Image (cartoon, rainbow, N blue to C red; front, side, top):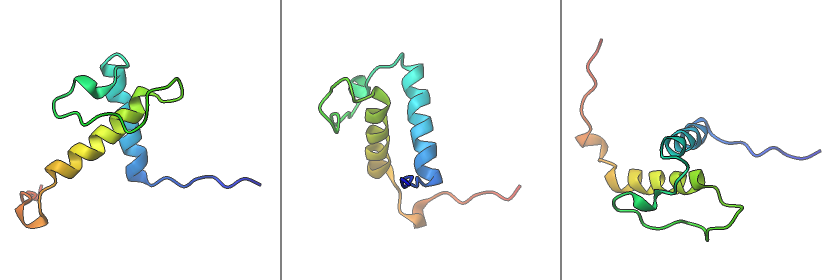
Length: 77
């Protein structure tokens, strides 16, 4: 019996977001985005553009992450 790889809810959300962005960009790689650092994999038929979007979004998040004490306070509704 094979083991299924468990993926966190955050990772699933990131993958879904990357696929949506990729669709909105007509299936293109994020190579045209500002500050694009390059694909994490050599481009082949096995690599999908959304996989590069995942890597791009993770890198972008790491660069723009604010320390917890600088995050805006959430307003109570």
